[in-house]
Length: 157
Image (cartoon, rainbow, N blue to C red; front, side, top):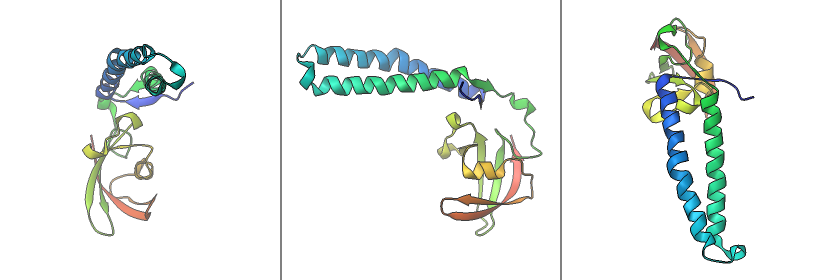
């Protein structure tokens, strides 16, 4: 059985919308490509057919993974999220102690991660290092480029 993943209502709605797109638009389009390639004759030397079948396999894997994510999603009641220590769905403002640069991240599930919008997965090294810490704590986090030290400035929703 797959592990439960925690997600916001908005994140689950987006996941369901993406899944619906794959099933209702992309799946029929690939089926059409396979049919057209099949109509061209000998399948043993038909590169279009092989490519369409491979694309179909990849699409079916994506659909199965997303269906599993929807089935195992657990919606978080955002009104019950505590801000006394860092946890999933908190916004955390941290300061790099070496250069005093401040950044703010929201810790989210892997399926909702979007670094461009400041949302990082709880599975990342930075998020793992921040979980359970409080405002004022200084945390040393091992990242690919080495050890970084951050001070937690603020925890909010």
